Image 1 (spheres, rainbow, N blue to C red):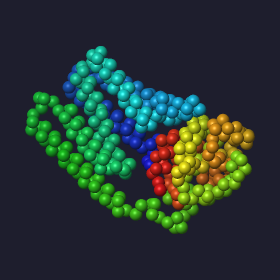
Image 2 (cartoon, rainbow, N blue to C red; image 1 turned 30 degrees about the horizontal axis):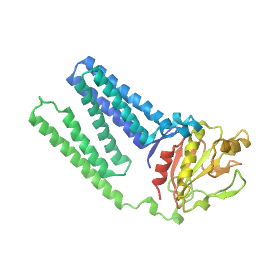
Image 3 (cartoon, one colour; image 1 turned 30 degrees about the vertical axis):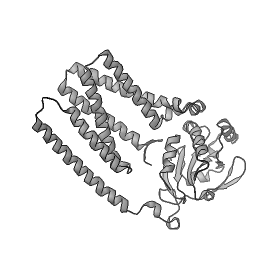
Image 4 (cartoon, rainbow, N blue to C red; image 1 turned 120 degrees about the vertical axis):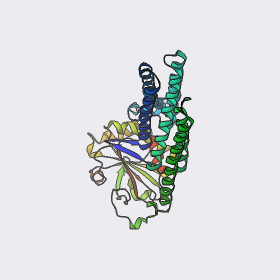
Length: 352
């Protein structure tokens, strides 16, 4: 699973490249409008497009309350750190479409130019998203290539004007086919090399150095839970583990806890689990931990790092900090910042 770390916030890569695609779509639409309509109409349509995207973003954020009302009620700060994910994005798209249909009905701008501008933004976003996904996400490559190819030709058709000469159109189509063919060849070659490469998962645990970097074996430790029971990290060997470091006063920790509880309950019977380590030396009072566990109704194991030693080993300096550990005890990812249930699920599903 791919994400980008921005300060203390971890954002899934797919959302970043979607944003890049939208910006590129607006730029292409602006260039096309400048060549085909008046300045006033261009400004009005661009305002509608940017307003629509902004409204969609707010709807995407707010959809979390609609999709997971229990989580938001337990932790209102979830709205600050998280979105409605893929389902929330679908809701946002519907709201954006309704917004544009309203303005088309009101005829505040030239309808044809608005519709074509919308299609230009959509197709350009799809092209850039899928092309970047080919090389950054490394999954469903054939699907992303076919999707980008289809969006590319649809974009050409959208940009095509009736007055344009057929020779020019055929020339553009030939160039597009050449570009897509070369891209497909690069993808095929890269995908073949990727397939024949020895994946990290085939490395034997006995040959892996102990450490906290990706690809190293997670340092083992033993800590007591809030109930006084001793637990050892190596006891979970054979299961995929999300190891989370937190403190009760930390706002993003509070935001992610309801998501972690739901994730734990949903995966309790699977080969994935959640192991939580409280940085007890960072607490104002040790009794705050038990109150926090009761308040958020946490049922997953909460271990107490009472001397701060484990937090130092795992370099949990900014919290929350989490590690994704595969079933053989190898660290696959380090995530600094809060995670929602969708992100945790994608992380777990990305390893064996």
